Image 1 (cartoon, helix red, strand yellow):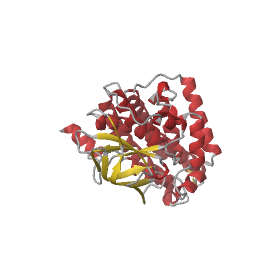
Image 2 (cartoon, one colour):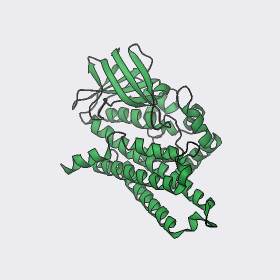
Image 3 (cartoon, helix red, strand yellow):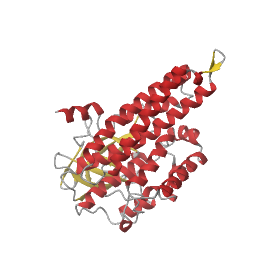
Image 4 (cartoon, helix red, strand yellow):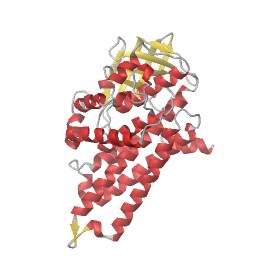
Amino acid sequence: MSSEAISADDLVALRDSVADLVARGGGSEAVRASMSSTTRTDAPLWSGLVEVGAAALAIPEEDGGVGAGWGALAAVVEELGASLSPVPLFSSAVLATGALLVAAERGGHGPAGLLADLAAGERTATLCLAGETSWETPGVTADGGILSGTAHYVTDAEAATDLVVVAGPTPHATLHVIAADAPGVEVVPVATMDPTRPLSQVRFTDAAAEAIAAPDDLLARLRDVAWAMLAVEQVGAASAALRLTVDYTKARKQFGRVIGSFQALKHRMADMYADIETGRSVAYAAVEAIGTGEGAELAAAAHVYCSEAFTRVVAEAVQLHGGIGITWEHDIQLYFKRAHSSAQFFGQPVDVVAAVSL
């Protein structure tokens, strides 16, 4: 599960390819249209991402992937974070694939060909983990491979063909794979504050699943992957929020001058930039540490810092946009909602700080 090296030129080309796909796919208009689609995802953009190999980046070559490592996938995650594109990359290529790769390190193998199918985009998976009140306690239990209970805050479940389920009780959680349309499985979409990241409850009623051997530290390892990659996504979104703010302040006039020329506003945007660049350094350090045995502290630091920095940046962005910043018509409100929702993903930063302080 190492983060293999990829050249700087290849990373630039990969970012450019993703940015071009997003732009050609309609950008913000496509994001808004996807919010009300059947699966609440941008299916055409997802197909394009699969064609350029995005879903296969972190999967080893022997399993049908590209084997480029987490660093390459992070570059794609950052670009999609910047556009808020509702595609199942984070749910499938990061969370579900991450769980399968953690298990594979300890000899646990999922259904034959699953990783290869995920890499090729022939199947799409998502992770079922959280209980109603905590990411630390799975909402689903397993008894002899039979799943019962409800997983909450499941991303992109409506678009998934397969569910990768972490079942309790903790600390010895078990890993399972089951088809999303299997008997005893019910996907219940839920309304969300952040319409760009669809969430569902997934209910299991005596559902027969395939068990996968997993290490005792499965939850901790998976959390490190989620926090590191989420931090990269937050950096991408915060960067886009700053760009929107700079563009707006260059166009908006008061007292006969563009407001971006006011020194006080320049200072505030400089502080936003400093938050983002510090966050980028922390986030990519955490990504680089995935699988090295030193990733836990960096991942926790990235989750706390990037969640708080993203929240600060969008709060400033909304203020600097003035009244238009709180209207549905302007995209900055979508970034505000993403900042507050992503800060709760895989545990609140305040809980992480409290745990470290004990």
